[in-house]
Image (cartoon, rainbow, N blue to C red; front, top):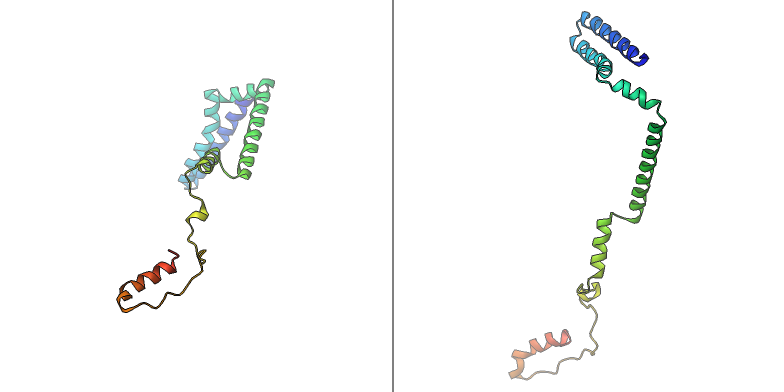
Length: 146
């Protein structure tokens, strides 16, 4: 009962301020003040204020708020741990699938060899006049160790 009286007084005061603001030719501000001042009386008429008053003095309601608080703390803790580990569950599963593939090529296997082969490089023998056509090809093949 006291909450309804306070809300009605706040609404009446707000409407009075809106009338004074409108008298000063600030109509947009007056309408905005009137809108804000009608909210408390609207909450009283819908029963929200009574529900809040009943909830505020209920030990069960406060225990429920405590449970919600604990749930929120647990949720935020798991999020922090997840960020430290480096990703979400989906990302970890995708990384595990990629690591488990047996058909994946090793990074070293794809890199070209830059050093010389196991055979020592030898100079090609001087070719005769008839072998001039193949001497270039032989040099290229020996260069690649074939």
